[in-house]
Length: 189
Image 1 (cartoon, one colour):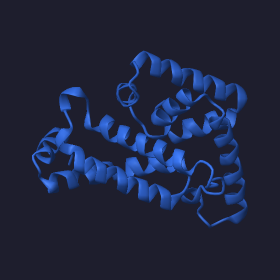
Image 2 (cartoon, rainbow, N blue to C red):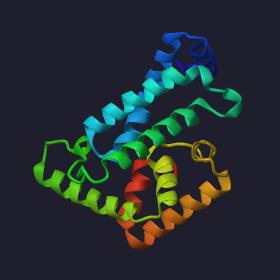
Image 3 (tube, rainbow, N blue to C red):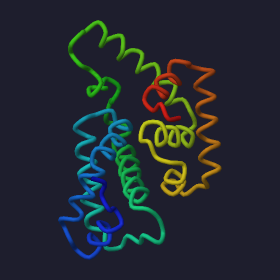
Image 4 (cartoon, rainbow, N blue to C red):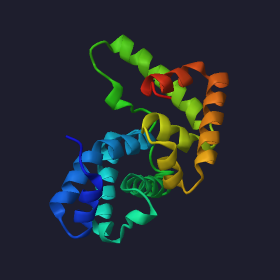
C-alpha cells in the first residue's frame, strides 16, 4: 500500500511522531544507501543516517512543502551531513577498503575480482568533476528524478540533465565498465 507522503509530512509538522516514523520507514534505506555510497563505510553510514533523521525530526516543523518536496529536503540534509563529515574527517580516515555491502562471501575469488572492478569504476567516477559526480550518483544510484536532483542541489533541471549526460559520456570514454555498472545499477537510465 503506497503511503500518502503529503499527509504524513503534514501530520509530522503538527507533532505526530508516528507519522514521522512512517516517513522514516519510507526513506531510511534510500538515505542510508546515499550516505553509504559516499562514505563507503557501513558504521559511518549508519551514524550519519541516524544524524540525518534526527535533524529532520527536529526541523520538520520548519519544513515548507510549498518550497519543495520532502524527498529533496531529506536528501539535502543528507548531502550536507556527508559534506560536513567529509570536511571533518578528510585527513584522518582511509575509506578505500570497503564495499562491504557488496561482498557475498560465497566465492572469495569472484568477490575479489568484483571488488577490484568496483574499485576501478569508483576511481573513474571519483575523477569526474564534483558537480557531475553528484548528479550522476543521485540519478543512477539513488534513483532521483531530474526535478528532485535540481531541487536538492539548487540547480535547474536542464543543468542537471546536462551534467548527467556529460558524466556518462566521460565514463563511456574513460571506463566502459564504470558506465556499464551504472546501467546495471539502474536499468531505467
